[in-house]
Image 1: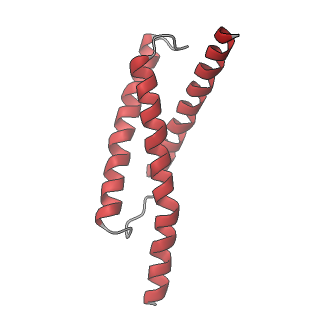
Image 2 (image 1 turned 90 degrees about the horizontal axis):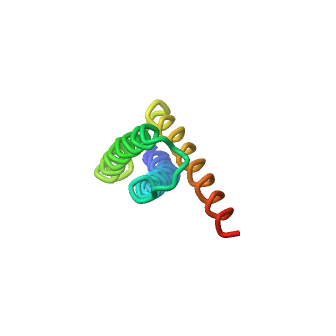
Image 3 (image 1 turned 90 degrees about the vertical axis):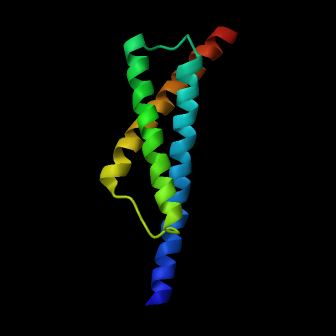
Length: 108
């Protein structure tokens, strides 16, 4: 039975660690874009709202990573926790695509 627990723990680590890393990457990238770029296709209110949600998600993901590390991968996350982060990540990716596309048009 112990071997099964070790395999389950390793599987959890193999799946959850990269997922949390992806959340951190996209939220950091979006935060930097929102804090530094003036030419975004967002109103100031949309920009402010998205930035606040990204900052909150960053805090939550960082806390989850700390707990995951502190328990040596013995703690997982439920879908109710992950889904809002995933929806925000998709929103961040869409913003990055629009921003990149608009900058490519300006360079042409």
